[in-house]
View 1: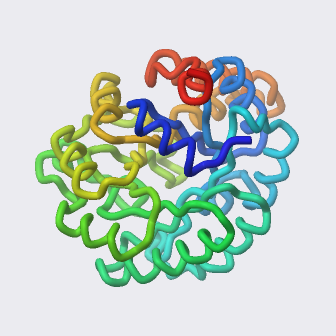
View 2: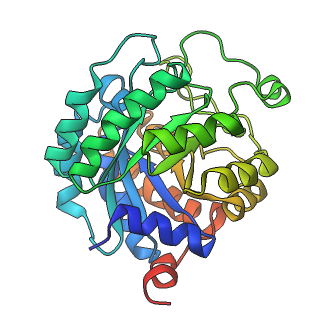
View 3: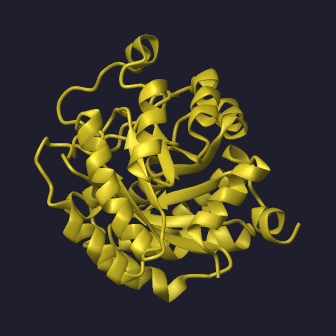
Length: 303
């Protein structure tokens, strides 16, 4: 059976990456896992709070139950994505009960997102969650900097974000944060953006993003822990591959597979099998073409 901390550590050591696929709709679990197994890959199945609040994944427990039906312990892991302290609507969230529910439901790693707080507040909240996670024997992911895209209101043009380095993770803050927060993995802001969650914007194609590779290298050297890239959909392929070499060991993929599912249901909301086939095909494409990680199970555990 895979362990999340070990899998991500091995990915970093081998210069590859563990993708984490978001589940905004429960029927997506089955085809995502099937694609991962068929490609002899390793991946996390993950759900964020926003996906049961604003999409159709119902609850973290519902995702855990669906996951247990189809899981393959040699290929898949269950991760709790974004549990915000302040959410995308700028409302405070009672985050610890959510973390505790995830641990009880069998999630193998968790993420706390206190990036909308100041540095000291982020450290304090992360340390609290990391302590609970470590007591349960699982790792904790956190975020420093601001990966744009989930905010309410008008979207900032991508070129403006990249040119001004808006929200990018600060190097000195990252050193302090990792030292004091006890997090195991750090989600960094280095050029990627989240897909929109506002209902009127969900079907929009994300702009092609790129990554500041030198900044990733500097953050990796400064923190000496696996780095996580959120907003993995829509990034220039060469940038992704260079980013992995530079220290990205986990990458979140959500918008591409969600839009594949939603598009397949347009005009026929009952044709779930067609939507699942679209998700399966898209995940296979991500594994083989975008990330080039077919057969990573063999690379990391049998090589």
